[in-house]
Length: 273
DNA sequence: TTTATAACCTGAACGC
DNA sequence: TGCGTTCAGGTTATAA
Image 1 (cartoon, helix red, strand yellow):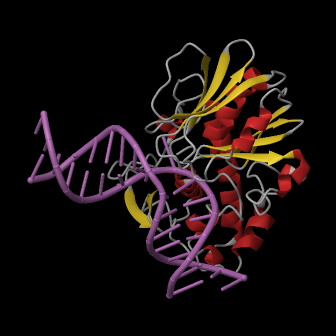
Image 2: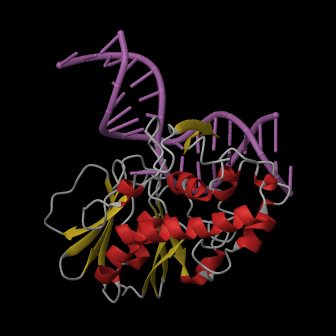
Image 3: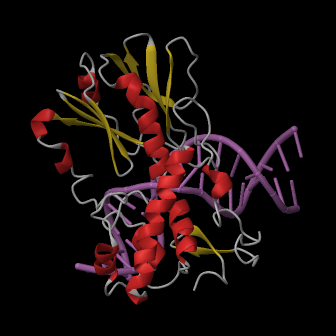
């Protein structure tokens, strides 16, 4: 569910409550997540939080004992709230901070993850889940030359290619469709069969759509809420995602829906070739 | 090596 | 109302 803008919105929301604050208590209410939650995550307890960062869709909460890795999966959200607020079903993991506040991970589908990377295990960038990730989409390393090189000889669809975390991180199902629409590229087109000028455009549009969405606080489709429980406002800006049968905002043609590797994919049959 | 598919899980929406 | 079916924003492990 949450894509990069949602995760970044969440990160920015929780950072002021965590950074420089001491963790008083850690509560694991449900161990059955993507991977079993190890008791080692308790090690953050008693430490002052020194960093709240993001890598791909992982949120990294660092103290001098190690780093807590959080992933929101498809249905996860983080919320900052006072200790007294009643717990909800699917509040699986809780960090109590000084001042009576808590950060709660709520994740009905439990595709999310809560992991501990101890300082003794070396740099967090060498964590098995992070080590092989491609570049962040908003950095200079993700550019037309890089994307063109990555596409060369690839027979898979451009949409699948851009959703591959080894190519570039953080581009999920919504923004893949949106960036391809803005670029005029049909999602089913083979990655290795697209002119470099068009890939250059795609590079720009990926950066653009993600940046715009972050400014709007992410996309709320069903259950994404920001750290303060409010929705994001980017949905109103979507051109194709979840708009099957509705008129294209550019040419009025009916938006089509197809399936690429079991994921719903939306495009305009006239604007995207 | 690359690509496609199955699997993880709950809940909302829909049709009958 | 109730039941069954389908679908959902992600990622890894396994198979082809």
